[in-house]
Image 1 (cartoon, rainbow, N blue to C red):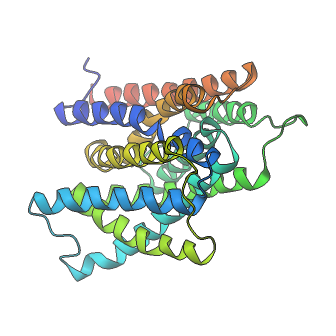
Image 2 (image 1 turned 120 degrees about the horizontal axis):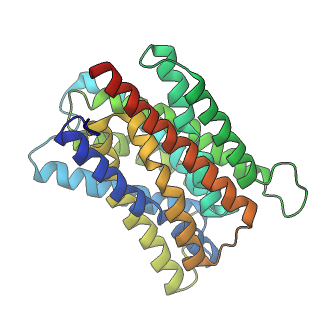
Length: 300
């Protein structure tokens, strides 16, 4: 019995796996820039501009014209708003929390996609996916040290990360709908055009401050490079296998985020937090495998 339905799905999964490695770098790199004196506004504007430049440039090189149809403006504007909120939540959260913790919180958006998909009738809730959800939440509680009073994380960092999760769920769903009949490059270019304009208003709140030294600037550019390359994988991954499946496979990202956090900025997690990360990954990967078996039974 085949595990994958077609070549397109295989390519989509490979894109997701590569994206997980690349995306795993940016939270810790951004945190490294913060440690060397950069502020949130600088990192947000720099990384968003690089993503916009990359997506827009490749679109034009491929002969694609973003914002060619007026009918697409409204959807792109909504997606861009959620993209901007997601960026603020993720990179803002990384100012207060270790990168691995930010990513684990942000990835609760896949649970939102699960329940929303059930609400839309795309799948049915059952014991397997409910248990997977509860296990993932238990793992999340361990990562966040819920119930302990020592070395707790700032509430603002946790709230920013959860804000990113809600926004990521929203824009992922929109991207999934748009990718059914539009180019992933155009979707990305339009969304980040809107997001970048909105994020420029952060200057009214906080003037951009660069890192104090070359090491911090290198970290900021590393974060921008990771996000730019990863963005191509995100839009093409969603276009190839859909928003929900993309979110499931991308659960490998926290593993790489943890590794990069240890290497780049010396983040230290305790054994219970590593157990929490493992629980989240196991539960969500198991859910993906169950869905595959379910699909196979329907077509077998």
